[in-house]
Amino acid sequence: MEQHIPNTCSGLAILLILSCWTVSADPSKPATAEVEYKQYELPTDPEGQKYHRFLTITPPQERYYNTRMTASGNINDTPKKETVILITVDTEIGGPNGKWAQAFLLIAEAETEAALPKTIDLFKLFDAGTPALEVPTVKVIELQNPPFVFTQPPKDAQVPNRVSFRLIDLTGDGVLDVWVEFGYAVAVISFQNGEFKAVFSSYCGQTQQPEYVDLNNDSTYEIKIPNTIYIDGLPEAACPEWISLYAWNGTDYVLNNEKFYTENDDFLIRLLRKYNYQMSQYGRFIGLCEAYSFYVALAHYYRGSEASARWYLHWLLEHAKNDDYLRATDALLKHLPPNRK
Image (cartoon, rainbow, N blue to C red; front, side, top):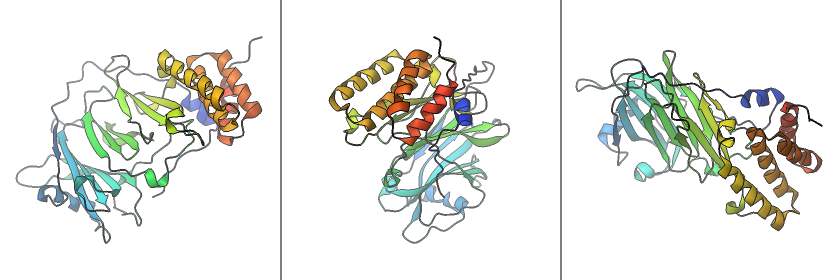
């Protein structure tokens, strides 16, 4: 399966992603029940292997199923708990930390001593397999790059060993959601309008960790996706970091960077310090100027500092060579109100 990652910014997309939504938690909702987790030390564990039959397809030669972990908790609108099972298709023998090419998340009814659980839903989280297992009745989660992050993770770096999940009420409705990290990506599966659906998915930086945080203590969590903006010729430590913030709008997680950049002076100060230092050291390189100028302009834009944002954006229109920055700059300038003289 090919991952679809947008690399352009159309005017319509800009209008959508620059909007801001918030929602308050419903205090009448009951508290979520305790969650029970189980990790599997070996792929040959008989208890873990019993879940493999739900995938129905036999792995190709030199690949095998590996149940990484399970959890029991109430993740829908019924009073009973459900079982969440994480299964990977591994490419090397090495226990639960072996290399893997595909990842599946199975949601099933809680099992009893008399019988195995009945499956409710099956999600394919990641697919870098060759060939890929075409498991029937599976819901595929398409990964996205955050808006204004124009570097896609390298193909050979998309499947590190890290893969796990946890159950937590992110949306504030009193029902547990599934937060799952797999490779350099994260997804959220939530029970909405009578069914399980992916309400968020995104790539993130190769060396950073995504996180959920309740910024305004309203029992509804925001999601922070960090990315390092790589620049040719600079060490990673010198490259700027960009944070994309997503907030729950009652249906999905949507970009709401205003909420992060308006209230976070420290981030802007660190970005400007790094910008000024790099310009003094390497300012003759247009590629470096493009990257720093664009993200400084974007931070000012989200803070509502129109004059500062416009100054950096006009510099980019005159000097930038990268088409991604030029398209995004043009769209941002059109979205700003007319210049007040």
